[in-house]
Length: 220
Ligand code: BEZ
Image (cartoon, rainbow, N blue to C red; front, side, top):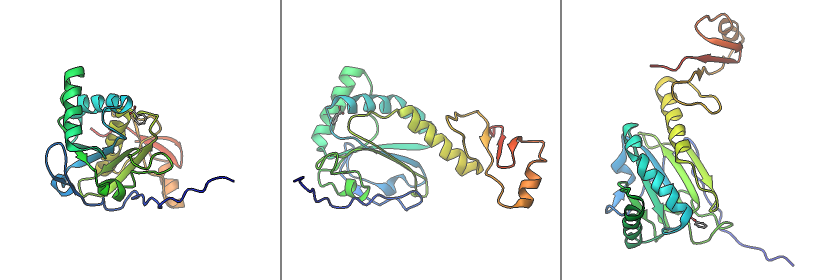
């Protein structure tokens, strides 16, 4: 007979939801989500300090921190390890890789923040967070979320690209095609009525494939 596992249902915040508020200890003292109001926030969890895949991710987040700052974004890490563990790991990363981790890392020993954000998936691990990423806009709404398992490291470049696409949409209302990178043509949202479709196909300023698929050069 197979053993049934009783699992507390994970409540995942969804795109468009207000980002759950928190106040939590971190490697830089107590932080609140509210501290970052007006900035984009990339909140990401990792399973455990001093583990190999997590270390490769952290090194890359640390290297790209100035680029995220240039995009008006604040990185915030999280795991269920202690502040002392975070400090020791950050110091080890500096020693071994020569990079400074300048973003705060939440020490979520109580799992309060992880549970609010649905970062603990019991089928993967009961006592550690999966590799979750939440992109939160300056009004503190969730704009994107990604979940990766323990075994697969994330590409920080993809998280940066996603943030660029979200910022483009927030500023210009444009969408982005598969594999888009900044500077490439963007997608104009499709027409909503027959009349708009008829107008759309006559537009000379757009690259029209058909009434529902039109591209425009990247805004300056
Ligand atoms: C890692 O980061 O290497 C790792 C963490 C938890 C489980 C498996 C791998």
